[in-house]
Length: 227
Image (cartoon, rainbow, N blue to C red):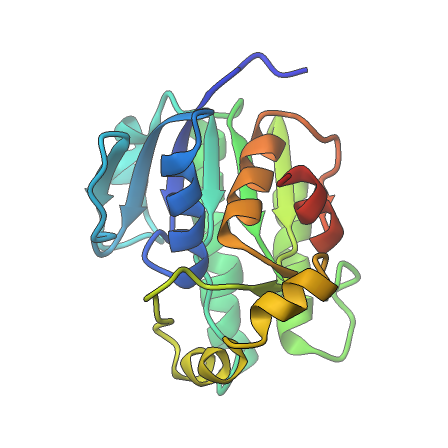
């Protein structure tokens, strides 16, 4: 059981495709009473439940730490494509940035639920052949060992993007342009592989509220929790 019937949510990465999907559901969901979106650029959204906090250097959020206190959950959806990146570059954004934010949040709010959007196929052993999967696995392992009261790794597979939203990553834009017509079919046939913004957001809210004991959510888990 959770001590909160509702949540106040910190959201990192609200301008990305995943973050925008999560933000959309948080604003629509009665279980979320307030969202503070933290990022380098504004989300472009206006809503009575939404506040925004611009901060240029997410590697060091200590200057804004006092404004991040009092929240129930932190949804970290910042991500970058591994395409054309060497491991040190990918590690800097995927591991170093995530852990920098998490360490500050752990110091100022150890009771907060920290949810990290990872990826299907993430390698918890950190020894697999795929660089991105090893780095994601290393990131997950570090977060789970950090000592949050609740830490949940959300292993997202395919996501049907919000209407009109385009990824900042060229490869993803091309991929989604090709896949967009068949993604809804993929969701119907393989709901544990391809999900919707609503299901993803609802699953993360449910996990933050303690409606699952799982620390790693698979695509199947996302589908079940998001109902």
